[in-house]
Length: 147
Image (cartoon, rainbow, N blue to C red):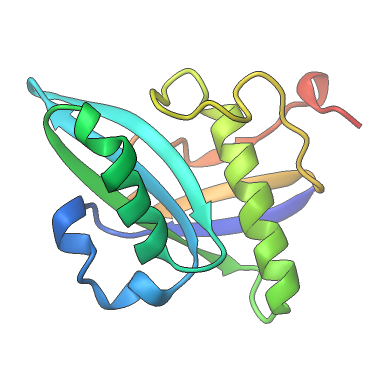
C-alpha cells in the first residue's frame, strides 16, 4: 500500500475560486454546499489539465441544480514529493477513485467509483488541512480490494 498525503485548501465559493491564481494547477477538488444550515458533500473530482476548466464545466452543467452556496477545496498531493509528472497524474487518478469509493455514502453527485473501484495501486490517503467532512485517513480495506 502506498502512502499519499493530500493538503486541502480553505473552502472558497465557486464564483470566487475561479479567479484564484491556482486555477491553472492540477490536482483534486472537493465540492460542498451549505443550505438550510447544513453542509452537504456534493462531489470529489480531479483534473490533470487545470482546475479552472473542470470547475467551470461543473458550474455550467450541474452545480446550479443544487440550492445554497457551493464551496470548493483544492487538494494538492504533498507526499510523496519529487515524483515524475506521469506518476503524479497516476496518483491523482488513483486518489480520486479511492476517495470516492471510501466516501461514497456521503457524496451526493458522484456516480463513478461508488459501487466498485479498481485503482491501479492501493493507496493509504492522509487528508490534511481544511478537509471538511473527509476522514483523516482513507484506504480500501482488504475485504473490498479487487486484485
